[in-house]
Image (cartoon, rainbow, N blue to C red):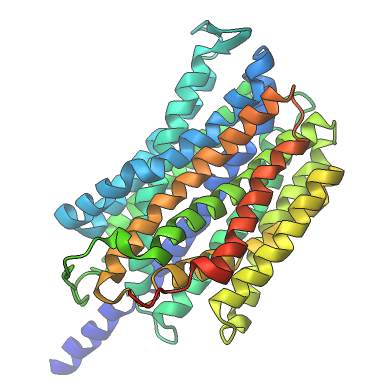
Length: 421
């Protein structure tokens, strides 16, 4: 009887199936995040053909709405995990994600019947506002999923793997999703010569169905509780978390890093479109960006003996040169090359920002998430700049140049822990 109990115990420890589903969820998170960004150019033609002088400002609101879901749900994620634990929070995140996809699909269905509104010389379909609501809720759902999926991956014990190995695999699969999403949008969703709003209805409904299936699959499975064996370290001390200079500047570093990454991943398409570059060509550019991220994450494992300062200094320095060159020459392939450089930046910034925080580390990690709002704000500001310059995107890349320059400063100086700390 004890042998049976022991076998049962070992079987309960084997979370291969839940791990595979969670890894699939990582793929979907990366895929949907980039799909949302790649909707910009086609939906500008389909939804906003009469938006005139505000077309770039309005188009980049898609990315703004999506990434504003991250800071909007930061505290909510923590509350849900504390009150309902990780599994219920996971179901809530999946539910919000599925609902958001259906809202976006509904906006396309109702496009003709809801009429339009006028702002200055821009005629805006009311359905587009509904789409933006869906994009915001999608960001909220993805944010919640990211808050709980990493702990689950770490807790899903599978023989022959460690928590770090499982997270690395999940991160690589996430990057695969980001790499193929641009080609999927360009070739399958908007495969016709003229993008139509109705093109998004079936794909979004299919994605919503997949999310629901994942939710049911995970609900039926036994999942480990990531908090069971965790040592709950109480926030101790009487100083403000903002008193750490390298953390304060690290929040800004995360802000400009995420902002620059999203500017490059989404607005390069709008710039290419303004230059009348063929859809197949700029789809390859974006795929190169995200493929570079994927390749860089695989190669990053060989850089473990190189300090975060050196990694960030070298990559940001090269990124400054590439983005400056792209701005001066309008050679967008230079922008596409920055994806490889960005692949190691998140880990380097994060590690440097929480260095020597001691008992403040958990609090500092949470504070750094505020910086993700850069993914909402900087691409939108770039779109506003493009409209202010008469639709010319060339000089708007100064945003990325300055962002990469700040990261270089952070690597060389801003990340230093002051002696009085």
